[in-house]
Image (cartoon, rainbow over all chains, first blue to last red; front, side, top):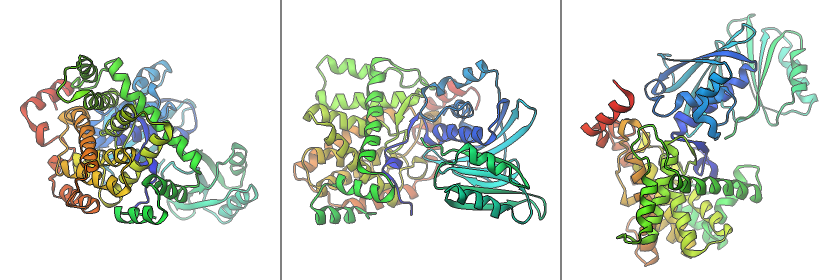
Length: 224
Length: 291
C-alpha cells in the first residue's frame, strides 16, 4: 500500500490533458536529456503500446519533444515544442514499435549527439506523471528521476565501488540506494547510485577521474 | 497515521481538531517539509486552479478534438443573462469546471485534482464557496488539505485512475473531495465532511469512463460540471442533517469493487459507452483519419 502525499492527490501542476501521456512523457524526455548530457541534433522516438496508439490525441509527441528540449511538465511552451525543435535545428522522428514485454506506456529514445556519438534511453510512464527509466544504452536500470542519481559506467574490476563510495563519503554525500549491473563478468559494468542530497559537478568530475571508470552521468531530481 | 475515514475521524476526535489539521500533521511526518512549505505549495496549486477556472471563460481554447471549445464562455454568457434554472451559484460552479477542462484539453496548465481528467471539480467548488462565503486564504488552504485527505483515503483503499475504476474513480473521487472540503468551509464537523464525501461518491457509483476518440474532452468536461454540482448538493444535504446510510469507508470499498467489475471496454479504452456510438466514431475519424 502506497503512502500518498498531499501532492500526489492535489497535483501535479502540469500541462494537460493526461498525467500519464503528457506530464509523464515530458518527464521521460527531460530525464533522458539529462542522462545524455550532450548537445544532440536528432532524436528518434519509438513508441510502444498505448503510447503508440494514442500519442497524437494526448500530445505525447509534443510532451516528449518538450522534455528533451529541457522543458518541465508544467511549461506552457510545451504545446509548441515541435516548432521549437525545428527552430533549434533538432530533427525529431516518431515511429510506432513493439518493444516486447514492457509497460503499456513505453518509449525508446535514440539520441544522435552533435559529436557523432549515439545514446539510447528507454523508459515508461507508469501513472500520475510518475516514470521509470528502464534501459540506458543496453543496460537494465531503474531510475525514477525523483532522487539525485549518479550513473557510472566502469570496467568490471575490483576496487572501483569502494573508490566511488569513499569519494562520496569524503564529500559528505550519503548513498541512499546503490545498484550494480554488468553484462558479463570482467566486461563493462554499470552502477546506479541514488543520493540523499544533490551532487555538485565538481564531485561528478572527480568521479570521472577514478581509475577504471569510463563515464559518469548525473540526473538531477526532476520534480514537477 | 490514517488510512481510512474511521482512523481519520478518531484522530480528529482525539486532538479535537479539523480534518485539515490531521492531514497537515501526516504530511509533515511523511515528508521533511514544515507547515509553511506545505501551505505555500498548496497555495501555488490554488493559483493554477484559479487561473484555469477563468482563462477559457475569457479566451475559448482550441482543443485537439474540437468537441468542447467555447463551452466555458457559452456557460458564462448564459449565466450573466440572469435567467437560469439553477441560479448563479450552480452556474458559476459549472462555468469554472468547464473552463478547467477546456484548458486541460487544449494543453494548457492545470492542477490535477486528483487527476487531469477531473481537474475542474475541486477548483469549481472551492471558488464557488469563496464567492458565496467571502473566505480568507487560510480557509481555502485548509479546504484543500481536507480535500487532499479524502483523496488520499480513496487512492489508498480504492483507486483514482479511470483506467482502473472508471469515471466514478476520477470525477467521483474529485466530487467526494470537494464535498468534504465544502462542508468544512460551511462549519460542518469532520464526520459531516466524510458524510458528504460518501453521498457524492454514491451519487455516481458505477459511472463508466468512455472518452470519445480517447480524448479527455467529451463527456469528461460535462462530468466535471456535474461533478462540481454533485459535490455542492452533497454538502447541502449533509448540512441539512441528512445522513448517508452507508458510511464513507464502505462507500469507497464499494466504488473499488464496482470498478473491478467494470469490463475493460468501460475503463478509459474508448471501446464502450458513448465512445462506441456512431457519432463518436465520426469524431474519431475526423480527428485521427483512418484508425
